[in-house]
Length: 64
Image (cartoon, rainbow, N blue to C red; front, side, top):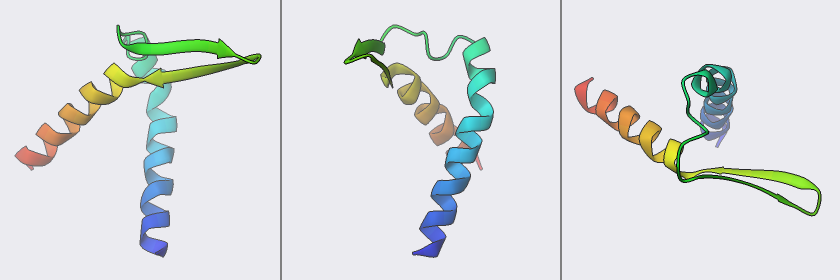
């Protein structure tokens, strides 16, 4: 159980660290990334960005 908590914590830490870099590269503004306001809050669903980053991670894992 503690192993999964550590893995999730490290993944969130990496995502938080790479977010500004990815936004400068154009990720987060791709077609298929949805931003909308509902009840005074802004929601962001990065569908396309998630698919692209998942494919890249899969290719890197396959090579290694």
